[in-house]
Each structure stands twice: as structure tokens, then as C-alpha cells.
Length: 433
Image: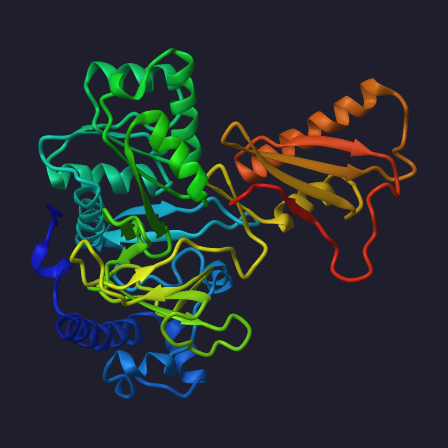
């Protein structure tokens, strides 16, 4: 029997959902127009005023917001409430230096945690469960979001954060944790470690996992489910919109229900910006209709996916999105961290290397690997291994401070990376996703 955190909202009629969206969108557009000069200017440039927006059918008239706008408006340019009304920021792993900083009022945090609570209940959670949150805490939204959702459901919450796998396993076993929340690659690592310890699925108390923040394949899901003896559920979110819980999987495990009382989703053609009909693949665009401090209208996520309104076996009526099937920009998600080739390029150029490099991403033992091959200039070229390893270490350090993760760096001879006629093939992603 499917359980819901807020049945009257999660199983509302489509007419009711549209009514909420229409009313909230009209209010939100006025709120943004009155309080965010940056976005008002974008609206004026497009010749649109709040009076033009009468329902969600008029959404297409509004201008888009992109990651670039967030960088230009950093830090306070998109803030829509007085700073003294804000109680927290969260932040993404940055692109080139400038991070996205999102602001929250207490009400914004409550709504976000409610979305996460829905995801936990959809995964079978209740106040009788022990929920271990092994997402990173701090600026990253994973830990705080699921932590708050777990409290709302009434689970005993174990805020382990990520890392220290032996301690994670000790708590899972000693406290009988039933729900694990972390990135899929970390779940796979915990599963592998438990297997090495000789634990069989029936000796592991877990029954469900809520895994997000990076792309993962159906094969990886089956593998984690079999090793831990659980059901593994997908969750999706962006710091820009609040964090995890924008959408989540139900027992059907066939796509993620979007919390449509808080977010309006559109699919657009990434080239033309034109809105595509239901069931067509394109770029996902979100409008947040309840957020007060940092409300984004028509934010381009760059994630490519499909929306479907087909009736779901779980009884939820909110639209479902497929797993993102790729991106319309060149961003990579490696171990849950956003990585842009341009960031890697910045580090190389700062250390005097030419822009001839190749990024090889793979997944070994369920963990993403990042290998950067960099050409030396003829002046640098040497067969002195000590000199080469010092240079490699400097690049590893530079990349770690830029990206927040460790890459393997290999220096190669001048002219040894294949030149291309058209767009340089900078990234080779060997992960089977």
C-alpha cells in the first residue's frame, strides 16, 4: 500500500494542480518584478510585464534565466527579500571561481524539507525508520535537505555526512539504519565494502536508499539493490531551486515525480528555446512558484530529459521526469561535483601550459575517476622524471583547489594529443550511464 507524506497534495487532481500553479505563478512574477531589478530589466527587454502573466499558459512569454545570469548577479542580484529575512545560504560546487549562492527564508527551508519528506515517505519511510544521511553537509544541499526531510517524517536521523566508511557501516549495523541517503557511487562503495566484510543482504538492516546528485545507470541501481538487499530510489534537485527534492521516485521506479505545487517544469528545444510538447526530449526548465528569497523563473537546468503525465501506479498525480539523459552544455558531474572543462583549462593556463589537453572520465569499482592528460610545451619537455612528477603534483594541487576533487594528471610529450579539424574532443566519458 503506497504511503504519502501529504496525500491531499500528492494525489490532487490535475485541475487542482493547475489552479495552484496559475495562482502562485501570477503572485511570484509580481514578487520578482517588484523586488529583483535584474530580472525586471530582463522582462522589460522582452517587453513583458506582470499583467501579461495570467496563468501558467503565459509562462512562455517570460525570459529565461541561466547559470550565466546567476554568475553576473552574484551574490545579491537575484535576492527577492530583505537580507534580514534570510536565515541560510547553500552553494553549489562552482564553475570558474564564482559559485552559485542561493538564499533561504525560514519558510523556504520548511517547504524544501517538506519536498524531501515526500521523497522519504515515497521510499517507504515513516517515523519508525532510522535514516542515515551520508550526503555531504555544509554548503552542499544534499545533507541539509534530507536531514530536514527525515526530521519532518519523524525518522531517527543519523547525520553521518560522507566519508569514513567504516564508521558509516558501524552505525548502519549498530543502530539498525533502514534508509540510506547518499550519492549512488558512495552507496555502491558502501555496498562493496560490506560485501568484502562478508555481509550478505539479509544481514544488512537497510531496506531503502535515496540516491542522487550524480548520474547513475539502471545497471548500477540493480547492483546496489542486490548487494544491500534494498530498493534504490532516485532523487533530483538543484541548489538554484532549493536542493534535492525537486522531484523523486516512487515505488514504480519509472521516473521522478516533480513537486508541482512548488515548481513548474517545461521542456524546451535547447537551440531555439521553443517549448516542446509532452513526451518529447529536450532541456528541462524550472520556475519556482513558492520560494521567497531566491525565486528563479524559467531557469535552464541544462539537463536533457522527457516529461510524462501518464497515470502512475503509485497514485501520485504530479508529472514525472525521466532520469536526465545528458546535458546541453559541457558540464560533467564527477562524484557529485559539477566540473566544467573550462575550470580545468583555467588551471592549466595559469600554470603556463597550452590549451592542449584531454579529460578522461571513467567509472572504476562504481567510483568516478578523472584523468587529465596535458601536453607540455617544447620548452618544458624533459626526460627528468623528478621535474615531471613535481609539475604533475602542482597541477593536481591546482585542480584540487579549483574543483574540490582529486584528479590524476599525466604530462605527455608536445603534439601527442590528436588535433581535431572541428570542435576539439576535450572530454572522453567512458562511464556507461
